[in-house]
Image (cartoon, rainbow over the protein chains, first blue to last red):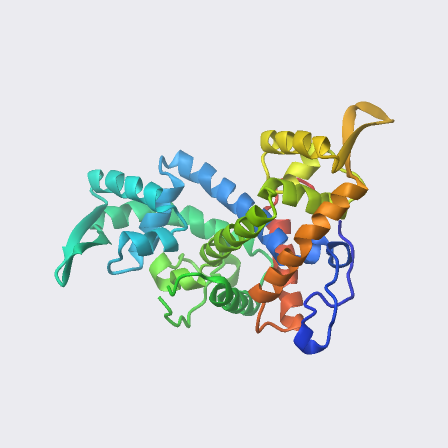
Length: 168
Length: 168
């Protein structure tokens, strides 16, 4: 399936194209969502393996990662940023609170909202995980220069803007 | 979290860097796996909604997509290409066979291997799904020119090469 494709993938009506190409014309290897699904399945499986050794779940790692760079967030925001369902995130936070890694506090302006933030212990726990994550990032982008990485990130931001459902 | 980051993300030892940056220094929005996980969660949820209306599962759609561009594949290859666990793929194929969308045949050189291929009916079924997939691709890459798309695909191929576990 390493075929070379010389046609145009993005055939927009505004650019004068009147018919969609077929999947066969484009080829799976030029269909970005296919490649990204394969990549992320592999990345997530690799990370889950590393995390197992460190005795931490994917949801916990993701929650700590998000909280380590945010002053405080709601559980709703956290479940979006951490790509984890609210019900799972809720259980994850219970467990992280018991471990002393996070705290939840009612927001002074609106007591119905509870802000989640990371503790020093939580920060230390995430620091145990981070080297594995970062080294896998370097492995993932082996052979990719910083400039290409920045263009890649820039395209990802455009896509995220196009397809996100929430305004965050 | 729309911070601007001016440092170097990929700090490789070979380039003379001796310490990893922290997650906070890079920022979530410059950590590619984070962005890709968020994107693909959104893409997969959007597609699942569209497929529900067409009364087809994600696993079936993926199997038909792969088979529509392959002459024939084994169930092992199919589960990798379609990013679907073998057990799920096995059930999916049973159901697709009952619907008359695929056929399975023992390979003449090795009767233990069964090759899966798509039927004309299966091709027609995938053609019902494809317009929704393709139009969502255009939406996803709104504001991205063909040249940028090609560079994006090229980077994805490098990553896939770096992190794949199987030689396919």
